[in-house]
Every structure is written in structure tokens, then in C-alpha cells.
Image (cartoon, rainbow, N blue to C red; front, side, top):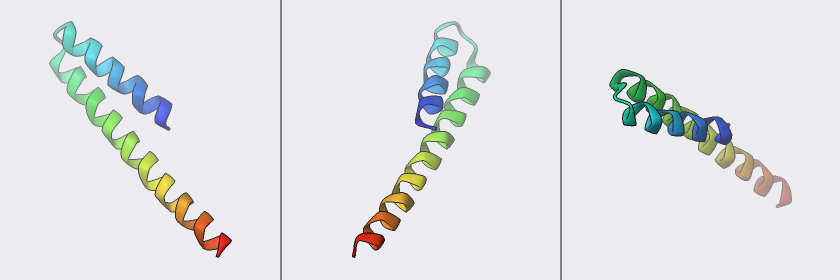
Length: 54
């Protein structure tokens, strides 16, 4: 998930450099959504791991 977020951010930067504003905005939004899902999954996974060790 983190890899795809980085890919979409890179695509957003490239699209912005070439003047595709709508595509850049869309790629950036998808990248942020993917990163948010990654962080939420990481926090849940970390919480479950800590709960199991106690």
C-alpha cells in the first residue's frame, strides 16, 4: 500500500510539471488516501501486536 501511495505521488508531481492539473489533483488525492489507509493499518497492526505481548 505504501508503494502505491508513493507511485501516485510521483505521478501527481509529473502530471503537475506537464500541466495536467486535474490529473495531478486526482493522483495526489489517491496517494493521500492510500497513505491514510497504510497508517491506519499500521496502527491497528501495532496495537494488536502489543496487545498479544501483554
